[in-house]
Image 1: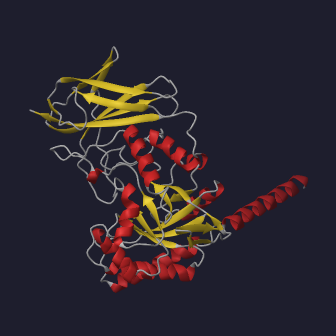
Image 2: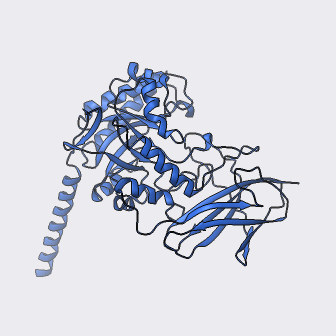
Image 3: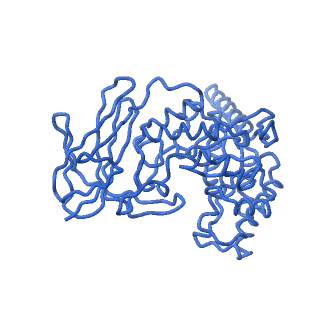
Length: 427
């Protein structure tokens, strides 16, 4: 009897705790964009809130530890779990709503399909509108990429109006690939319900404030994707392989571009760095701040500094150069089949940790998409690099074609430097 009583009491306490958590996570926190001195301010619960965010839902516990305050999603799938995890870490969420793209075959002249999409999104908004971690609604992602029908912006405005009707407590934006006057003019004419716009820019990030002013946008904005120099704006080999920056080169440009634009422009309410995680897009290392093993690059150190003003205690390795047959990645490298070529690396560790090297050779990726669509990672070619007497030797494949050699330099404490070098094997 006494044991049963204890079980019942325990169940009551657990149930009360669950209800309390649910009520807490469902407590609405009002967010709004207001005009400030010479610019705009995002207010959350009446207090200024500058977004120090990252795109993605991986490693968000580290994001919170390193000084970030927000995450961004591309759709509302698994939204409840993401919002709950964010709330537990005192993070907020710009919740993406998956809006169909013309480049994927959607027809914005099809009124029935447009209305069906609107009602589907209405249900998503109702599901998450009262969560305490919700910050901003994001309508679609780069709907201007490879599109022709401007009616998409009418649909965006209808979605924004619906969100305001269903949820008056959170601002609404849409994510734009790049900055140009055509889309800004469309926004002014067709999307008056938007509270702010969001731009996604890579190599040109430092120029965003001037570009927006030149395009005629004087309202609030945030940068919802930014990062390294994009593969479409990088130098290319004669066989059309884009040349990727090393992790150390990326760290330098992340810092300089952020400080030149996001940090300085008073019309900018914050940003989401891309990508707080790892993905295959042209290469496995181009856009992710982490490796597939969860190792942190030098860019993560930079983000911690930009968010907090302090560097982490343990810094990632720094790579100065990688040479293949005495040539850099920006040189045109042609090699012969089944031959041995020297590799030379110049790298260091700020904390004097012992560095270890791992290599991976892959064919150049041929599964190339646009707009961040899913790509397949090429299969590695084993036993391509051998190390001996502090030297490394590449043994080239026996088949003609384009290849890329990757280098990962680890400090043994989950920090890494990355680099890769494209080359072409000829008969």
